[in-house]
Image 1: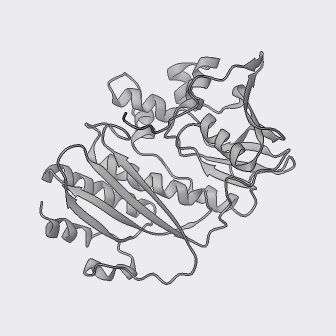
Image 2: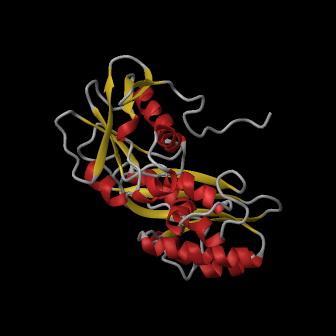
Image 3: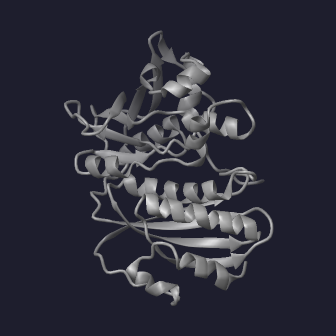
Length: 301
């Protein structure tokens, strides 16, 4: 597929008015203050080489929209940087891209195309507006730590995508995450701090605490597991600990004062206090921290 053919396909997708039909090198956006986020997905790191291209497109958009959800923002639009390669892969990616843009009412603003041999590297930038924009550094001593949804489905979904037996619903949790945009809009004006859970519940909670200059304590027994996850992997402590250190959940993690009641379904899993660091416990008492709290990129040396 040539660059011109690829762009012709893009012109049939939901376009932002500022994109001018994708006939210019720049877009013009006039909406006031914007929230801007960008994410890159690398083949073999963030998605499997044999993941369906349409699912890769979905995940690329959804992970960025999850960052907008954590700011309580409305979606303004997205910019795509795309490496042209195999025609069949490109066409399937375009179909998935169209589906996710329509599903979350996101409009394409523009981007760039290149030719690339080797592992695919995909970058998307998302813009949001009308954001309450809570920061992750706003938690206060005594605040309760809450999380939307359930934790760990994507971890099991990855195992299923790699060949393990299991239900398609869990596999879809890995391949097609659902950004919590509506929940973010409801929570944004009332939370003290908020972020999405992308690299793992424990590591992201620790990051929120460190940014806020506080310690955070988490009750592993409170970490919410889905019925599918409980049926698939059981409910013991190792399972919950594994779920809490896995990534790709894209739920919202937020801090509220002790008397606060979230306006969306969520589970209270811990609290903030003076000090520093992360501590874990369950009904039997303190739980040692695992060697790895979640996913972190490292250099290749």
